[in-house]
Amino acid sequence: MTHPTVTVRSLLAVGALVLSLTALTALTALCPAQYALLAQPIPVAERFAVTEWRLPATSPPFAAILFVPATWLPVATLKALAVVGNVLLLVLLVRLSWRFAARRPAAIPATLPLSVPVPVVVALGLWLEPVFRTVLHGEIGLALACLVLWDLTRPDHALGKGFAIGIAAGVELTPALFIAYLLLTGRPGDVRAGLTALASLIGTMLLGALVLPRSSLDFWTLRVFGTSGPGEAWSADNQSLQGLFARALHTPEPGVGWALACVVITFAGLWLARRAVVRAGHETWGVLATALTTLLVSPVSWSHHWVWCVPLLAVLLAEGRWRTAAAVALVFSARTFLLVPHEGGAELRLAWWQQVAASPYPLLALAVLAALTYGAYRHRHRRKTVPPLAPVRPLPFAQPPASNSSASTMR
Image 1 (cartoon, rainbow, N blue to C red):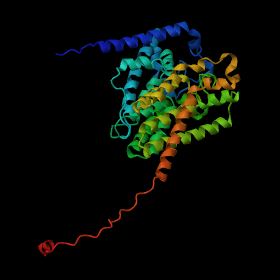
Image 2 (image 1 turned 90 degrees about the vertical axis):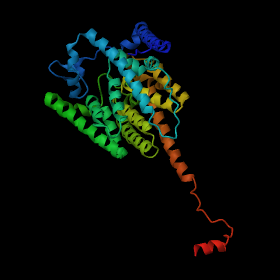
Image 3 (image 1 turned 180 degrees about the vertical axis):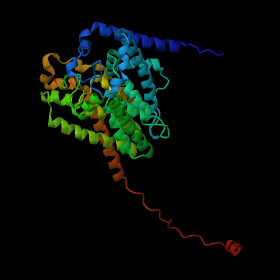
Image 4 (image 1 turned 60 degrees about the horizontal axis):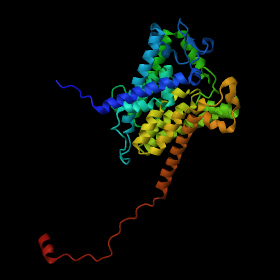
């Protein structure tokens, strides 16, 4: 019987993870003001409550059904499980992102540093603000990202591909845009997965209606069309287009301008995603374009929703874009939106030079979509400017006459 060998490298990797968790815990203790703001509970009266226990929720009733067992645990136990569970989910997301980033066209060489131990990557990933906020507050963004990414990286012939995406959309509606992405690519495997995801989503709706009929009717006929979630949409913690527009226009209701921008971004993002997959074969950028579009057009995208920064960084590293990856990691680690004034609606009175610090994530997402648009334009322009190959003409030399011996042989 063989036993696994514990190497110095593995011990150092685990030590780095433990050190990272300790440092983040110390940061939370030393800077309570920065992280206590979102930890304050929102009054139940301002949130959509379901079940006889009046559980606060702004997600579909199916999500409330899933999380009812959480009420059976003591709060301290639930907090510990949330922290440990999210760290394990980050490990899974890192591995899925590695596998996802490897799905690149053959023209792009492999540069992904697979030799880096996973605990080291997790230790560094914990410092990304969306990941840290998810672990700190027990959010479910990592779980949803793992469901979607696991499903998308499965083979086309895998049994039930698309089912997990439908479940994720049944918990939070925003992953439903991935269903549109799968259907729009037009590839048989993607269309089959998209239809499976749609059926799975409908199944979650029917289950919610069966268990919570009144709440389901209220949600799917009224609250699903709302453009606000718990808290103020203009808060700097809301890193969606609505939050960006509200802060830039100094109004809590950005109105028609934001709605038109969402329509344009939705169609442009899905067009870019389809083009990246169908025309260029860049499935990774098609998925990332869909994810960024989802986060932009969602009425409320809290900072912890942006855990898709993990697969984004993995793809950039896989393509050898080290400087871009470093810049993206800096944006998601700087926490600049926590530095702008928050008290008493101060986000609606920010100066022009404070807007960039207040909206780093949507501005980065818009920059990525703009870069994809430029890349699509260059690809199309290159195809138009490359002249077609001239027809091959015969050489201007007289053909040698056939020899008599050959002719006689033929005869």
